[in-house]
Each structure stands twice: as C-alpha cells, then as structure tokens.
Length: 444
Image 1 (cartoon, rainbow, N blue to C red):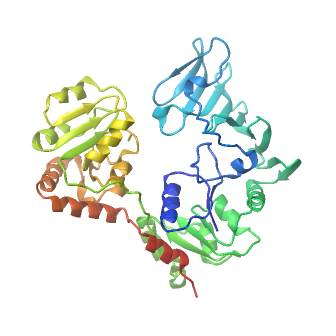
Image 2: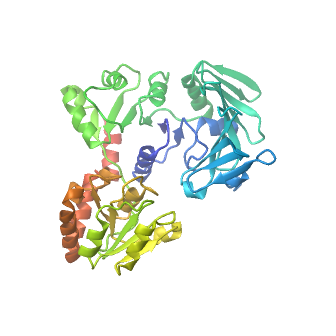
Image 3: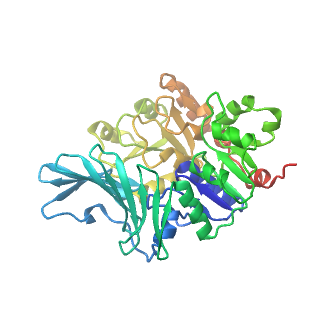
C-alpha cells in the first residue's frame, strides 16, 4: 500500500496527515520533488540520486556562488543577483520565505533572457538544473547525485527520460514509464494505492499491470460535468477497482446529481483531520497578522470593544498610519515580529481577525484554525473561507454586526465554544473512524 501524490501542497499534506492519524502509515511518494519534501515523503528523484542526510542545512541566500564583483540584494521575500546595474539572477526562497533558504536560482544572459535554473534541496546541494531555449521554454532538466554526477535527464520537448542506474543507462518514452520502473525498483507493495489527482498518479494506476484496489481522494471542484478520467473509474474501465472519496463539500454536492444510483455507491464524502494545538479559553485577546496597514474598520473595532486586546504583528516595518494605533490602550503592535513571538501570540489569543487587505502571511488563517481561535473576517478580506463558519463572515459594510457578534462572545464563554464547534463543522472535520470506514469498507 502506498500514497501517490503528483505534488505536495497543502491539500496533499492534509490527506497525508489524516491518513497517518487514522493509522495508515504506509509509504508516501511524491512524483514532483522541489527539494524540500518532508522527511516522511519520498520521491523517484530521491531514490535514484541517493542523497544522504547528514544534518546539512539549506543554502542561505547569500551563500550562492557568484562570479567576482557580482552581488546579491535580498529582502524577506526574494533576492536578486546583479552585475553592476544589470540583473543576472533571481533567487527564489523555500517556504517560509523569511528564512531565506534557497530553493531555485534563475540565471539570465546579457540580454536579460532566462537561460538556466539551478534547483537546490534542503541539504543545501544543487540537485537539479533546467536549461531554456531563447524563448524561455524549458528544454532539459538534469538531476544530480551528491557528487554532482548526472543521474536523471528529463527532456521537456519529447517528455522522455534518461536514467543512469546501477551502471546501466535506461531510456523511458514518458514519465509514467519512468515512475513505473521506479515503483518496481523501490519495492513498494502496490495492492492498494491512494492518490489525489487524475494526472500522473491516475495514469500510473490505470496502466499498472498488477491488480489492486485503489482510492481517488478528489480535492478539486466539479463544474457541471464529470472529468473524463473520473468517468473511466466510475465505468470500471481499468484493472483496478477504485473508490472515490470527495474531500470538498461543494464538489461532492455538485457531483451527486451527475451520478447514477450505481455510481453513487462508489463515491463518498470525507473531510480532513487537523492538528489542533490548543483549546479555546474564551479569553479577551485577539490576533491580527499583516504586512499592510489596510485593516478594514480597525478603528471602529478597537473603540467599540475596549475589553478586547488587539495584538497586531507584521514581518516588516509598520507604516506611520498603523503605528499611530499604539495610542490605544487595548492595542499592542509588533513590527518586524519574530516567529517566536508569533507562536506565543497564537497560544495566548482566542480570536483571529482576518481583516487585512492584500496577501495573507504565514498561513495565518489556517494556523488560527489549528489553534482553535474563533476567526472573524470580512467578505472583502477573507483569506481562508473554508476555515470559517458563515456566521463569522460579514460584508465590510456590516461591520457593526461583526462587532455585535464579537461583543456577545466576550460576554458569554459558552458562545465561543459553540462558535468554534460550528467553525470545525464548516471545515468538515473528519475523524479516524470516518477514514477507516471509507477505506476499509468492502464493496459487494
């Protein structure tokens, strides 16, 4: 049994965590490797390049090797490489950006065209390099072992792969053939495969010679029709019978009318389990994390709720407009806030106000949800609606109603507990039993 991801983003992390919590501790494989996969996730690139973790650290942005007299200019989100006034490179950070660990470096020629991308892993090694044509289209990506020798070459024009493995050179017409070879050489049990996309993981399972029973964990929208590859699974076109566990409530609602009664027996709804950190204590501390001074109706909130203390943190300097709020007794400001202070505030606060325009920082809403903070937001500023109950989402024009709701919670602790429970239900919190019920259920 294995879990097979195409990429490892938040939705893949959520499924991986939920499976572990439900007792499914089989290997997890990601078919795309950015060099910063978690320790308990492997990939074909890791298998063939055989990097050994000896406690090395990621490359810091100012450690990128440069020609003489070139310089690096960086900030908290990116860094650039200059030869005098001419930009010759762009450094992309691994998440979280503020640590300034190098994930990729794009290199430009004298005419400003991108010609190479060096790819670094969490051990600080350059493990890959992509070459581009004059129009900026990728031609080849090579992957190296710890000694810098090329092990894998991917041809982006033809889709083919060349692999140097155990003294032999192997050629594969496409990535699916390469992945199938990898799964065999790595020795994984393939009786059951869990996957969450209808791209390469689906194709890998669909064309697999071995018999088995799989599960597609569907995490994308359903917009008016059943995706073609999902239709193949529903029709039993492959060798491996496959259940479909839909993990988005709206997608599940949209899918059901498109199914026959027989097909519905193959489809389930299954939410996620989450790593909750603490219980809500119904205190009077609220947190806001922002890199902008555009906080909708902050003045009205602060003045209408004198018993609620607002902690406002930013990774950068704060504008004079925001710093002016330091005159309020129920506001604490944290410009250039440290991660240690952020963690302390998440533990201390029982409310999160998602009222900042612009980008979200530090996955703040998701983290607030995991800390069982009661999340309030405006329609215009909501960065994570799936983690909020409808009752705590307001139009910015209805800001007095938000104040009224917050005031009610501050006066009655039971209201906070009920609201946090509604928040969890809105996020479709699942249990280990829910997962075992779907995964272990035997169809007739």
